[in-house]
Amino acid sequence: MTSTRTSATAAALTATVGLAAASWGVLILGVGGMGMGVATPLGSFASFMVMWVPMMAAMMLPGMAPTVLRHTDGGGHASAVLLFVGSYLAVWAFVGIPVYTLYQPHGTLMAGAVTLAAGLYELTPLKHVLRRRCCRSMRSGLTCGLYCVGSCIGLMAMQVALGVMSLTWMAMTALVVLAQKLLPTKAAIDVPVALAIIGLGILIVVAPSSVPGLMPSM
Image 1 (cartoon, rainbow, N blue to C red):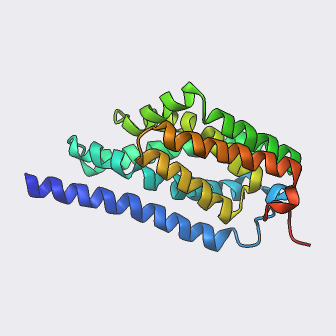
Image 2: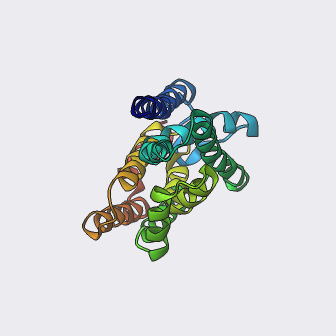
């Protein structure tokens, strides 16, 4: 029984991390030349979703590995783990619909304002509650996904505003998301991160030319 559970745990971890790595590969190959900062066009809905779903898998799944492992240790079989991960990603895929609907190429002022709002959201009690529930929820991938959307919505809005197809901003946002999923909620860590995001927002508003990647190179 122990050997079977160990094998299932290893398989779940390998599948989760492997899917995230494959998704990064898809993004690296697929978004070349598409990252135009705040002026990035989205193209057709189909082409956007082809990139959006791997983007969510690449950015969110590494931090979900501990939750997937707990789900496996709790008796989840391979099919249950696949359902958990699939429904989790389905929630993030659905988020792509309002993103595509509301998004327009914009200016640096809007990017700065969204970044400021994202930093302020990081300091709210709602963010902290949703973050804890996102990391602990094991009931279903759907429930976990909804909590994680609420927890990460500010960071994702910031990433979309700064450069929706920018690999650099994707990687930076993914690192923050990963840290928040793996590390406990502590003011000594969370407040400096929030203040850094707020500072970035102010810098974008005041001196956008000092932030690389916001505008397409001429």
